[in-house]
Image 1 (cartoon, rainbow, N blue to C red):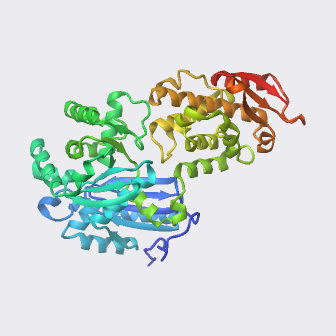
Image 2: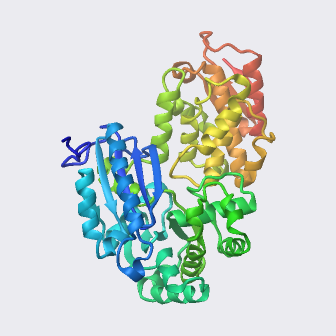
Image 3: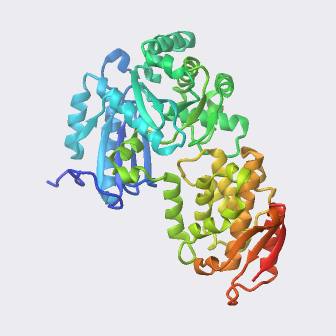
Length: 509
């Protein structure tokens, strides 16, 4: 008989770069296998598969895991561990949450799965589940201050976040399955029950003071964001970093109430199995926002699994900026020769004094420059569009939608895209006007830098931009060794950049 254990869980976490890492999340509504590129900041998702088992369905009345869900979970957890073994993962961890934690037969289920799969199952406490979900938000978003809520099928985890640190925590039995079993379709009763449970969390009152953001985690809430995007025609269908104000959440409740299930099921990314939980998920979101006095809702695609990974990272790796780490990795893989993003960043900095530099902060300018050589393999006629859409849709973390569009727009301009071209026009309103101008100027500077240098950092280092005569002139100083001769293309690109910064172009050298 073969050993059922497809791979081993090491005694200590592998270090950065040691191989793919697998996490299996055994939730109340779904089970999911995610395989990450490694134990590193900004790790890419190599594989992601979900099965809606409904382990927690009926738990509030029966006290036991749903038998059909157990059978479905059993088959798919064996599949997940076999898949992970075939992928050669360096580590696999199985995490179970509210349904398994609370069910009378939860321990028996864990023992069965451990025997079948050959791996230990870690049953998380409510406090630990909340902490890890909060770490996922901290790992994936910037300016993390407020309250995080992770809505699973069986519970709601609430965590206070201050300055990127985890604060007070609470676990409440407010998952959609719990609410539907106790209240049916009586949404007023459901709201009253949510309010009563929130009353038991004493720190919410103080957290509401100055709470600017509520960070929403969980599949049901992500589905709400997708429905809102569909209803308003939002051009960028990326959940992570998307934000809604309180009024938009209230409008969304009306949309869900007014649409048939068939209509909602047509929204891309909203499964039929998820539809039944959405009214309850909407009630919970609205009551939590009411308690927190109406902060904006920021959606995070990163939660418990990513928080678990983040918790394993060495301190030095954790401290890295995830956006810069991702962009630097792309630069290493995509550059013509040696990556020159940092050189382009330094070369263009003279353009970003004062308000222009504040509109597009150094972190985003550096990220943009690291991405400035990503489309040279594409056909010249399509480089601008390919660069734009690749950046808009890439799984970057640590940025919101406005920053994502700014990075895409800079790359689009760098590859010669028209400033208000039809392909980019739908995304421009997602950026404030001053950000749009700064992003365009950066893209024009990148285009000139690559024109002058032939994508080589050594030649770029022998040229420079100079703001002269009080900023009224923009000088391009070229080397005198003939390595960057003046030509019509250089003159054209310099003229476009100078015009964008309201200066007269001058070529020197």
